Length: 289
Image (cartoon, rainbow, N blue to C red; front, side):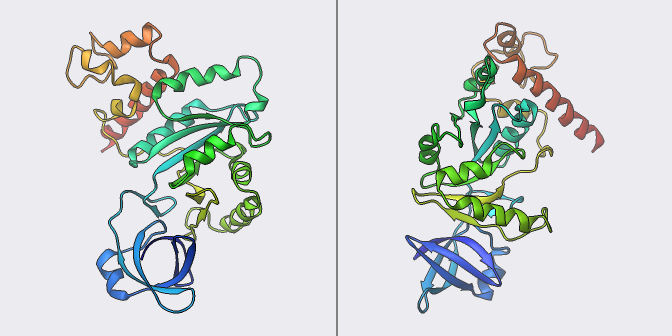
């Protein structure tokens, strides 16, 4: 049978196959052949007794994260609140870059939509042109939770976002009873937040698996080259081919169609300013090396 490792603990690997979870061991030759075994790995398993099994092979990975160590993640749900606290858009753009650099599709999720004051929903217009799924939800009121549940169905997802935006509340709204579990995990992680290996994928009743820990740290910049950075801004794609110079960085070059689109309001000035700031960081990192 083929299943997914949802938890590794005490030398055992808990593999979900259909509606069953098997407590499995992995043969030494499998470890030597594949190296580190990760939560999220798809494996071939043979049942061996009541509720137990043996992992016979590990299938190729589609993606791999370092923090948390989890394989085959399909998407990162990047959660920010529309208010309380107000969203840090530069941090949001860093999360988007980190997800894309890891080969994982982002979903932008604005929580606490019920707390939005007049004009605060204007932030959405900066991110609608990215083409990423953009959700407006309220864990407190249950607004559009069904839309989030549908996006998570039959996929492996991680939640990312700063503290206080309501990630645990969203999990609890998606599936009542999970809030206590995520609280217990948080208390455990306080003893070794950056080194814990006890990552767990939580099965959702409607289908899909959600990692119990945030997918990304808040500040680090992934190792991208300056010429790669524009490719992480989907809203540039329609304009970049019209730039005068091949490989235009949309920085100081003349005849830049992306800069023209920013001036005309077709590309968000806020997003473009963040792009320039990240570009400076990338170039500074290149100079140091």
